[in-house]
Length: 559
Image 1 (cartoon, rainbow, N blue to C red):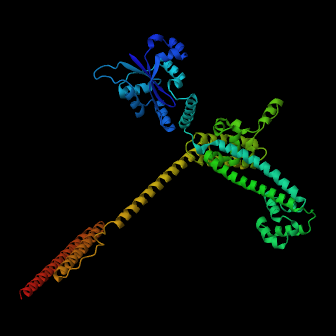
Image 2: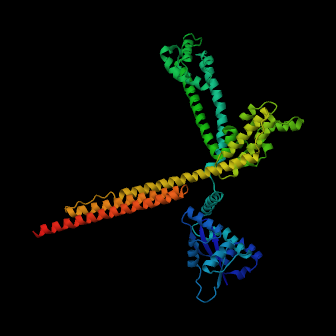
């Protein structure tokens, strides 16, 4: 029985024919020895057909299908075209060797081609993989390596299901850059203060903020040119008119030395750089806030954006932080103090990066360690929810923050906090109510859209029967007949309404006075009969009038 080999590479499908098996024998060890020698292996295995992939996306789709044990239409067409076609009613005299048993079973179910996957076939495919670039002409080894590398990256990225919005590496880089910018802005602003103080030393005592100092240094330039005309502009920068007047008065009586125009230009340029850096720092902080709300909303709502980002960056990633126990998270950032305490057998640190949280600052010195332990416990819960939960919600973080507030009140005032089970149940219920509200909003929006569509159809469609204008008829008899019919219909409708009202009244009164209701009922029946007789009489009168009119019309026509 002939043996064909199906080999799936990064560049395409290839089909080989193993026809010289007698030379190496049906032994795996013999195959292993012959695989390394291309001259011997080339006599056994020869290329039958090669089908290259059209694009990288096509290669990825084919690779995904084979990994899941599925046969694509492209692979089926390739096998049906290149494999020998069996005669009807006779057994197939060949088999197909495949690397994946699931693919082989799928091929056999669809095309009835017998497939095999054993050690012997795998060794042959190993030899094919080793010498693949030599079997196919015009295929360089470098091209094959590039195709394998690109397909490997795209396949792994698709399997991992990479979410771009939840990349914690961006948070780590942002918090590192934020800390670096803080240091650089402080050093640069101190340099601006020292440099400009040679010219205007009194400004340091008036303005304490670094950003405002750089802004005013750029605005003032030469202190000798500063006068009362510049007070409104200075008030806009400083935000206080009194300070602006104080700056002008200090400039008039300043003890600083004069600077050359080139020195003043350099001071202005440096002050502008400090202003640009501080403005970029604000934008970077806003970016960090948005990224933290996307990546770790519960940790952010519990402990803040900056402290949460520092914890993630120190741990290495959000998943590493979620794997940390609360005892490790409590002293995260105080490793030197911990090992020093272990070495000297002293007291271990109570907190690390968590110390920058506002909760520990609000606690008393006696309760700082206890609150740090409790806060680390809640931070570990929040980080695990953020890491392993698919829902992007901050409800759990808000509930955990309420628990920390209650624990603070318990330490200060002795008010007993709620249990963790009850708080988590409340959080789950609030999430369920949120989902229900969202569903109701969607349904209401869908109903509104349907109503709008129906109204638009009614406006664009034909006018309703009531809106249609009545056609005028010149003949007097014809116009009189519909009017009489409308009058009779109105009278009958009024009588029916009166009957219904009378029936409701009789049922209400029956419970109180049975005998009186019977008498009233008989009287009402008589009234109804009279009304009906009167109506019948009116109808007869109208019909007689119609007959008389018709007779008059006929006599006039005859005349």
